[in-house]
Every structure is written in C-alpha cells, then in structure tokens.
Image 1 (cartoon, rainbow, N blue to C red):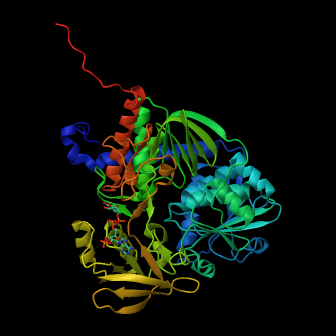
Image 2 (cartoon, rainbow, N blue to C red):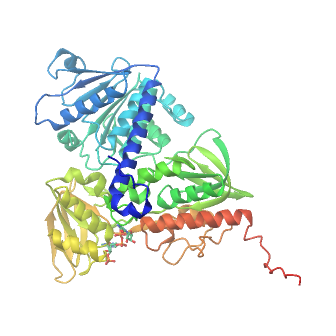
Amino acid sequence: MAHNHDHDPSHAHEHGHDTQSASEQAMLEQAQAKLRSLFAGMPHEVPLYLFASRDREDVFAKAARDVLAAIQKFTSKITVEEHDLLGEIAKKWNVEHSPTMLFDPDIYHIRWQGAPLGEEGRTLVEALTMMGYKTSRLSRESQEILAKIQSKRDIKLFVSSTCPYCPQQAVNALKAAVGKPDLVSLEIVDIQANPELAAKYAAKGVPMTFANDKLIAQGAQPEELFMLSLEKLEPQTYFIPETEATEITTDLVIVGGGPAGLTAGIYASRSGLQAVVVERNALGGQMALTPVVENYPGLTQVGGKTLVDIMVQHALEYVRIFPGEEVVDIQQQGLFVIQTSRRRFKTKAVLLATGASHKKLGIPGESRLSGRGVSYCSTCDGPLFKGKKVIQVGGGNSAVTEALHLKSIGVDVTLVHRRDTLRAQDYLAKNLFASEIPILWDTRVKEIRGEKSVEEVVLDNKKSQMTETLSVNGVFIAIGYEPAVELAVKIGVALTPDGYINKDDYHRTNVPGIYSAGDVEGGYKQIVTAAGQGAGAAMTIFEDLINPYWKRQNDTPVEKSS
Ligand code: NAP
C-alpha cells in the first residue's frame, strides 16, 4: 500500500528507495510503451530464426531464448522460429554455433552469434526496426559510399554486452547490411559467447570490425567513416563529404557530448537559446567508460554508462544532439561556421566541451598491441580477461577504480605504479589495500611484448634497478588524460602552459564567442565538476549573447536624479 505521506518532503529521507523505484518503474513503463508503438508501426513482419541448444549449461542459449520471448510479448510483427542445431534448416543456413539468430534470412544476410544482452539490447531493437520498416536510415553521404561498393563484403563484428561503444558500430554495420543486402553480409559475434572465434581473430578489444577477413576498424566510428572503411577494406581516419552538407543555423553549438556538453545543452536551451550538441564518438565521454560512479550527488552508486543514459535522456528533452558527427573545421565569418562530417552549422557562439583522451605510455608494443591485449577501457574489455592475468598501470583514481573493477569480475590483476604512493583518493586507496590486489611500486613498464596479442611486459624497478619480465595476457592503462584541444588551437584559443584551454572564471576564452567547459579546462575532472562547468558556461553564453561583453562600454552606473 502506498504511504499517504509520500509527498511530504519531511519524510523524503525515509522513502528515498520508494521514490527511486517508483521513478524507475515509470521510466521502464515509458520505455516499454515506446517499444510497443515502435514495433506496432512496422509495415513488415520480421521472421527471426533461433538456433539454440537445450543444454542447461548453455547460459547464452537460454538468455537468447528469454530475450526473444520477451520481445514477442511486445509485438506480433516479429515471429520467432526455433530450430534444431543439428536439423536441416541449420544445415541449409550453415549454422553451427549456439545460440545463433538469423534475421529474415531470405532477404538479409545478418547473423548474430550470442545473446543480445546488456548494451546489445539496443542493437537488437535497431536491427528489428530497420528490417520491420525496411529502411537503413543511412545518411546521403553513406548511401553514396555504399553505392560504390560493387563486390561482396562479409562483415564480422566482435562485440560484448558490457561495451558502451559497440552498439554504435553494430548499427553502422546493420545499416550497411540492410542497405545493400545483395552484397553485404553481417555476422555479429559476442566474444563472451564465442571465445574461440574471438581468439582466432585475436579480438581482445571491442568493438572490432573485419570485412572479408581484413581488419577495417578498431573501436566505434562515425557512420560515413565506417562505410568508407568497408568500401576501401582498410581503416579510414577521416571523411570529407563530396557534396554540400545540410545547413543549420543556431545560437550555440556545443562541441562534445560528455557531462559538460550535455549539461550546457540543458541550461542553454532552458535560457531560451537554440543549442545543439555535436559529438564525434558515443555520448558520455569518459563517463561512459567509468565502471562505477559513487560520487555523483543523489546517486549513491551508479554505472557510468547508466548515468550517461540518464543525462542524455534528460538533455534530449531540451536540445538536439548529433552523435557520431565529427567537427572537421571551424571558421569565423561573422558567425562561426562549423563544418562537421555531415553538415554545416552557423552559430553565434561555440562551447568547446571536447574533454580529454587517454594518455599513452609511449612505449614499444603499446600501439601495435592496442586492441590485442592493450586496453584503455576496463569496462569494455575487462570481461575478456576473466581468469587471466593482467596489469593495470597507473596510481590515480582511474587506475585504482579500474583495478578494483577488474578484480571484482574475476580478472587476476596487479597494479603497477611508478611511485611509492598513490595519487588516488584515500577512500579508493583503502579499498585497494583491502582488496589484496598485488601492487608493484616504483615500477615502470618499459615494453609490451607479444606476437599476435600481449604475452609479457618488461618492468623496470626504480629502487632496486632490476628489470624483469612478467607473463600477462593484458595491459590496462589509466594514466590520465590529454585535453582534446585541436579545434581550440585551430580557431586561435590560447592554452595554459599545461596544454588546457585558458579561460576566465566565466568560461570565456580569448576568442570572443568561444567558451569552454569540462575536462578540456583542466582542474578536478570530476563528472559533477564538468556538469557544473557546463551549466556555468551556458549561463555566461546566454548573458553574453544578450549583452555581448566584447561590445560593452565601461558600464557607468546611472546616477539617480535627486
Ligand atoms: P591522474 O589523476 O592524472 O593520475 C594518473 C596516474 O598515472 C598517476 O598515478 C601518475 O603517476 C600515473 N602516470 C602518469 N603518466 C604516467 C606514465 N607515463 N607512466 C606511468 N604512470 C603514469 O589520472 P586519472 O586517474 O586518469 O584521473 C584523471 C582525472 O579524473 C583526475 O582528476 C581524477 O580525480 C578524475 N577521476 C575521478 C574519478 C572519481 O572521482 N570517481 C574516477 C576516475 C577519475 P604519478 O602519481 O607518479 O604522477
């Protein structure tokens, strides 16, 4: 029974959990209603074939069956037929692994090996709706690239249910397979359900994409870059549209969709400004890669990716967001003209909330073995190393959080830190010591070795001056971030001696109309401080656009007439 004083704020502390679960329930119901209407609107049925063993030990088979049964409760537009793995149908379609799903196999060549769990649930919904609506939703530029492909492309995409970047890449691949079913086939491979296949392709970092057995991408790409990589059959790093992109005129372009950019979007739009957020990768920035966040006020403990989803959902109430769209140029021609990989924005003000990217150790073997045992994201790649031996390099909050996360999911992790004291906060340090994770103090990694994937590291101890090799399967690196300032430099924004954006207390840079917020400003680099900086910057921008500070005369107070 509901408590009749639930709405009495004086009792709020007693009912925190009730309130939270009620709002969670409401969110869940909203999401379910959205799914129902999405499926109901599909003009075409999607036949789905499931091949899954009845072996009780096959947890992925059971999970796949459960997920599909749940989806069928929402709609009759998706029909699921389960077939025997040893039967004729399996033979006809060449299915050997459990579980395998085939989507409308008379039309498309899309097969999914594994169960669509966790992050992959989003991919499944995208796949079903693309086929149900018979539309690939490809951008014009992507369609043009795809049209150039004249021979077969067999895509193999390795994903994991815990990787927040994977759905973006999976959707790219699905768009290609739905957009060009005659030539493009797609196999989505969950590495946890298919460890042998992942080992065969040395896919130790996800998402990892192969086409015709050639590596075409490591990590998630903007859509056009994916299509270009698929066309060229090798990884592409930039894409310049061949035709004039669509143009959008707005008051504010926020570059970066992490906590600073998303919060700025909310604040700017609520002030009455027209604002857009442009993000080259997946939304959330570093926040999406943090396994657990325990210091965001109001949320005792929340997964980084969950917090991203909450913030994005909130921001979308106010602001248009363009993910997977990279800013390639920025010019001032009266207004600022921002050219992205897809279109052009004309704007009065620009907020640079570009964040920071992982620092590299810069040692032999690091780049070559990146994605092959070297990782900067324990949330994404940690599960692959369950039961295996890895080192976690660094002594700050990130390294300690990630070492604890790795240990908690069953990875045999050793922390390697170059000094004899941690930089991490006391609370985390205490957790680390209590966890009994071995720590190699005063130790630097000199080299990472391995032929196809990481096999060993060479370690140098500063105090004993001893060099030793340690056999490991993985090297996780969390040694801080480098600010992403390329755009800032391009438009003439001054930097601090440490390389961060130089700004005043109100987030104004030296270039009138250009502002900054979040990790790119240096400072504490917390999710909550980034959000605060985004809010502050948006309020300054609102005030400046009404009354530009660069046009303001020396304000002299108006004398009161007596
Ligand atoms: P950080 O605080 O800058 O720490 C970097 C660590 O890596 C330091 O221990 C540093 O050693 C070590 N390091 C740097 N360069 C190295 C190299 N070339 N070789 C070996 N070791 C190297 O970075 P972070 O831990 O990634 O955190 C970045 C920011 O995010 C911080 O402001 C942090 O507070 C914040 N953060 C907050 C949370 C949270 O509050 N929940 C979680 C994660 C991160 P030295 O100590 O010797 O310099």
